[in-house]
Length: 219
Image (tube, rainbow, N blue to C red; front, side, top):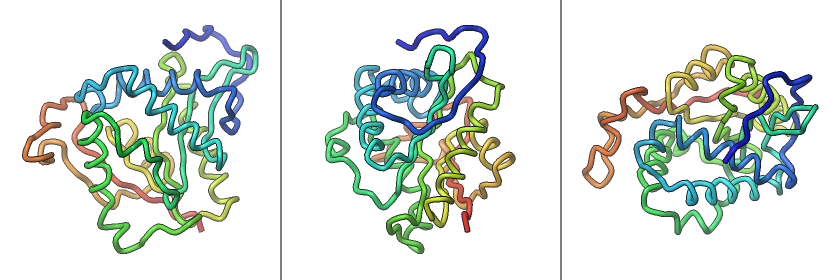
């Protein structure tokens, strides 16, 4: 369970994710996605399974240092996270054994960018994948998400990545990345049209229309 942060924070600090923040960051990201991300909510993924999944993602990013977090200077509490990866890195083997409730989500995310990557195959330090953005509810509207994106994109440029890519799964993230950070939509899958093994698994999503695959040239 994530903690409730204090109402006032002297300063929000943005830094690279490190092992000391693993449990707190995983708890925050899991809570926000389980309660606010449309596909995750619909799939009713058990909390313990989702938390383990996020921990694997975060542990993997310790090796490359690409994930950014926001913490309060006064009490060092995690307020937000932007989980990033080099898209050319191999996926953890544990992903092959995830609970079946994850399958439609990963299938849709794979298909929404498939044509783009078929024409432009990933190679190391080519695609900076901005995978999961989460901000504590109590800090919505304080530009924590904006700053996490800015810090992540700046780092990607410094490291020589060619393009930042993201799958924006709802209207809030689509507006954030496109209107405020200049990502351009390349492709889209509407939830009402998507089928997984013949089933319209996301047709009942009411607060989002689609997932959009977006890109931002970095050079």
